[in-house]
Length: 386
Image (cartoon, rainbow, N blue to C red):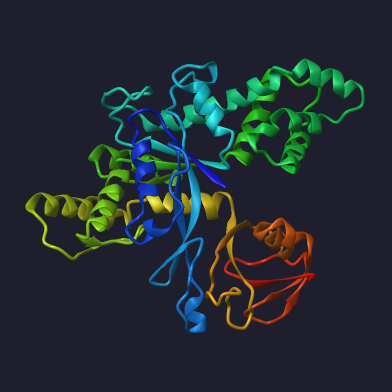
């Protein structure tokens, strides 16, 4: 899974990405580091079940901090966006190419209104315009992909090919869901006679269902941002990426104890006056009024809210919740909401999926079949043919 972090220049997009992927000392011990300059690892939080069995866990693909498991997800730092990106303006082509790999987007918006549509300094800019222009850019980009081969699609439909399948083939590079494309085409009654406006509506629906967007209202500590947030709060997560980055750096330096996504921090070392003032500012202007810096909340809202993922813990010993080496709850795996026991087996390894016999719910000790839909937090042993 990849989550794209997008936004216009000077919105704080890169700061958000850096804050989300930096991790504190404990989390940074996880060996997965940045793969490419624009790809990094963030984490989502879930309760770790190790307390149920009364043993400490031994995570391999994630990290456990005080009973909270931090499960890795990939963040993609997408090139800066300006109006006209679908026509190649700014870094439009690079932006759209990167976007193809993303399952969902976190749109970092400058809620203070102190930057215009292209990221230049200004005052009084309406952040609502930034929200709508991103959606419009993606819609027109998808429309461009559809219309460049529309004549061919029309001819092939007349030979008996299905419209929904041809449209899926045209947009499959966007990492879209075949069944959803079929559903959208049917709902909108798309045909060879569909107008450009109808195809734009189709493009918009494809974007909504296959590239969900979370709005991260950044710079929320500024007075102007707070005023704009009062108007747009229904659709916006309040965020201070700069505060999150500062807290993580202070934690890494051993100055404070801070767990990402937390509502507070504890000072554990002597601080100079400048640092005291900075941390006090974050506490009073971000943590106390909003409950967190919002960075972690935005990522988790995307993973669990928009993309509807769940976490499952595979084990090889259902009695002790261990792998073959005795590691307690070694892995935490993200799966789609509808994932079954067989899906988990394939996620672990193709060979395990192909040799699947059944599975065991480690909590109930009941055997489950391949079509059994797993629940969030399940602990599962997969049984395979020897």
